[in-house]
Image (tube, rainbow, N blue to C red):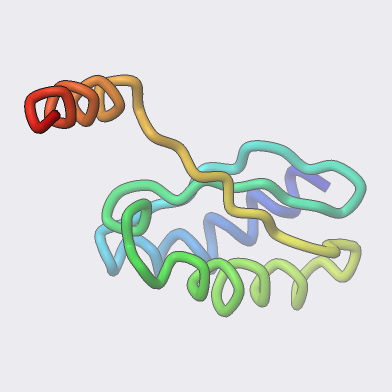
Length: 92
């Protein structure tokens, strides 16, 4: 299953995301649920939820009927958390 998902990502999803200065990382596949992380410009985009539904999930489910759902896992780097805490502590 992982190889099938990676193939769809490489051939259909990644080129679309790259055209928007974004990318995708496959995190996990379990019981038909695919967990992904969006990278680059896509990671902070307000339309990320719709990109996952309209592009990622649709592409995967069209090619691999066993896929039940695609979940977007948000990720915030430790550096970003540190910077936010630093900024917030100055404003208190």
